[in-house]
Amino acid sequence: MPRSASKKKKPARKGGASQLRPPLNPLRTGMPAQDSITGVKEMKRGGKVYRIIKTAEVDEYDQPPRKGRGSPR
Image (cartoon, rainbow, N blue to C red; front, side, top):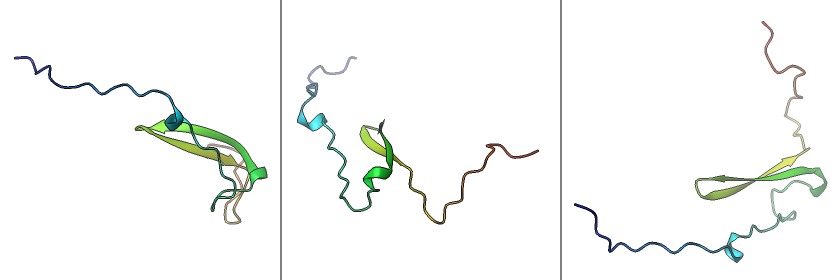
């Protein structure tokens, strides 16, 4: 037997102010220095939007990158 047709469909969302992403706030706590930001990328996962900030900053405990990517055999 088919399901009841009385179920209401949700109206489609229209693009509006809720769809706009707020700009980066460089003065917010934890943000890197403005001149060290090399790029910004947005990624969508599970209905949420994440903003990935690429920087040139290196912490003192970080080790420098190795020359080769693979391990020697």
